[in-house]
Length: 255
Length: 370
Image (cartoon, rainbow over all chains, first blue to last red; front, top):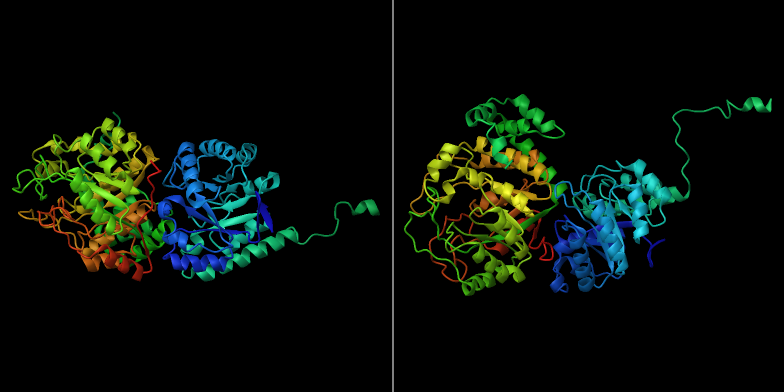
């Protein structure tokens, strides 16, 4: 179990709702994942008619908390506006801040993200910003009142795994808020790896939605995240490339 | 101004065409296995040498599209506002020299059309006009945007090219996307097909995407009209244009279309025919060349072709389209810009998309996003 702000989560696997071939299949996959925090793009849902919206109506389970995201906004001003709209329509003060002015690679804008986090935290939001794996930015976001940080493992949707692992380790080492590895996790082994290095949670979307069997893949991610976390808690033995004698350099001291 | 013209002028049509036709199967294999594809790779992929590799190209295209866009197809529909036009275009039903009753929809008529479009389930509309700067001008567009903004999540426009100031003026009214097709990058041929009107200015049209980028438009659409000139060469210039724009206006999104010349009353026969196999080759080539660009297919194409294309790299589709102003409600019998080929309703198309294991998406934008 772990906490973000005042909410306790049993599952360390967060999920997304995009790219599925149908909302019914999405629902089955999310149930199989055991995920308790599911992100939804504000631009994809009809907030004016959220009772009848196809995506939202498939997310009505007591254990599923909605995490609206601001995908599509290009700056802090738009993000703040979108967050307020989401809070009003979906009755949650949680917001996943995604500010990517670059629509090709969807790279997060660190400057606008910091500005928006500061403002939204003041307005009482639980802010989870999607960012580069930048340790200094993470500390600045902490100061700005963020509730967690969501550094990327590799470019979003790329399935390339933890290309930023060296920076993720620094972030995890230094962080006073939960670290959720977001973007780029392509396989359950990537998710397990993120958990093994001590991430508090991971967010997975494309790898589940686009697989041939999303329900089974969601279940696989659930197990991988649990296994990775157990391994982290059990403290992994250090990997060595060759066998070593017990103390070749200092044994003379005992002679 | 530093614009695409500077780059474009360093290219020669005939040499470019020759270099495409000179590509070999080795070039195609290299392009298929490259990590990042260059314009030279794109040339190989659209060349005749790539024809035997179509299945491989289709599989790669499908895989890349799934990774980026998932199993979804975006739905949009055109709303023709006006068929008034001062241009002569040899291939267009609304050409100035065609005898037909000209009509520009009034606000009341627009709302009648909107009601039908909303009933079909659409949340993304594409506004289309000819070019009649005296009556269908920026003030008219502003009024239309104000009128329909509350009813749509995403508004696109395919109208005459405008000045930078015009685009800057329109975006706050909720204009999200502008499509402007070059028709052909072959300058002499362009002149032949556009002998009269403002559209005869090749360079002004060529630099329109630059103006859109400077205005900070969210998304722009490019393309050529296939049938006017050698499609392989025209597509290479489209890819060159896309490459240039993506690097320069990195905050904009891009989409490509590949309309094939359709029959219309009194119309032009295509100079170059492109068969279905070649269109699939082009779609896959675009996708393999650029993994992020949106690819759109309209009702110009036949039902069976559209059924099969869902899985090959396309990301957006129209359905139930009318290409005459008032076509949905006001004057369903008036003359169309071109004959559509797939007349199935949006509900039928949605079912086809679902049967392929894809989800039709009606809303993927919000009026809160400017």
